[in-house]
Length: 344
Image (tube, rainbow, N blue to C red; front, side):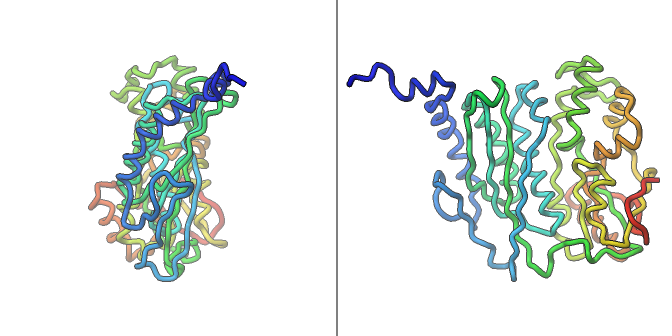
């Protein structure tokens, strides 16, 4: 029997281009190889990624987290700028496991799209790799899926899984927190990766701004304001983790929703809102979108990307470590004998 059309052609007719997938793989192979740390094992392109546990971590416990970038991807797609959201993804995941005191070891990404564009995939993976290199972490593999019936043309989703390690004795669970501990706020670099469904609605639909427009009063374009890279706090905290009682990564749920996750029963927190200046971007969103104060604090980070809970005697050392790598901090409240989080 003579075939009139090849299998690859039939698959391409169905919306999946195997040749484009191969071109994408050829673009990212060298990128992955450049992230291999001394813990990497196996070869690039295998069916699974392998890393060795660090030998300097006694009683190692693996800390794992999976996350995405949310609808910030729609801003990247609108801007045609795909090299930043991968770094967002890595830094977000690093901060999540950092909240348990973990050191990042390996990362894997997942890209799903309607039709593979090798240049877009390469830009996404380069962003992921840049984030991995910044943490001496191996990008041990990933997956690119082409699903034309599931995604709109030109759209994609990006997610990742991180593996970290911490000595069991050093893991942060919040159980060390005590009444009188001090809250230290770490400056965010913008919206980070949450609140974008509301931010996009305000900026693009209600205000009618385009990606290249300058936001009044801010002096930056919509693109630069909304695609500012999610800051990693690993370098600011790694040298002083032994002085910290708990950490809260401020993501979806804002300050009250995330800080409460790090407080043990019987302990509450009081946040002094006057202790820092809310960045102009958040003020713009509140005023332009007529968003009430309580909702702003639940949806957005309001300029606070992470909170460290430390004993009073450790405040100076913890803040000095952050200053050494250029991350501004401030004391913003304390732990009290109560339940929940109050913003005053």
